[in-house]
Image 1 (cartoon, rainbow, N blue to C red):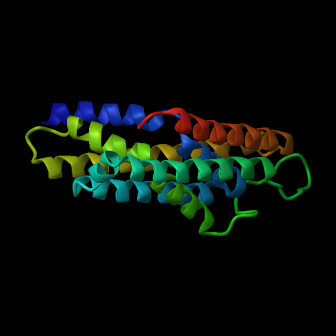
Image 2: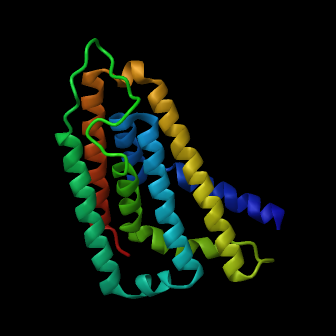
Length: 209
């Protein structure tokens, strides 16, 4: 069981570090409000994962993936939300500061709950998570555990890996504030993040369920 679990954890770790909408959301939160905002965004993301994971353990995500209409509704909402976040990234206005660096220590235009809600909404509107938890995760579960228990264990591992990776990434990003804090660099990162979010929306449109 242990060796099977280690392999599954390795696969989940590789999937966790792949760039996706979540990383773009963490980047935006870190740039706008520093590490606290990025941590709240990561908390929202893993809360969304827990919701999808709970539905998968209960067998309810299969209903979404089996219904083309329901899947399409979630997919359209996800595309619209990613486009909205992408456009917002281009429109972000940073407060003027003295000197060349911006201290990434607190929120600017975001409220305390906004990063959490953004992370949560991004994950709840991502139908690919439902597909992943329904189709792939059960194949990684240890065969010695009953289906629901094995699936629940992998969901918890995935959540912990995701939170640790995203908080660590935000920490590295904010530690480099002497570089990323410069107005020109922040504007460039905003635009890169916006392009990435819009690109994820376009890719979601062109992908089949």
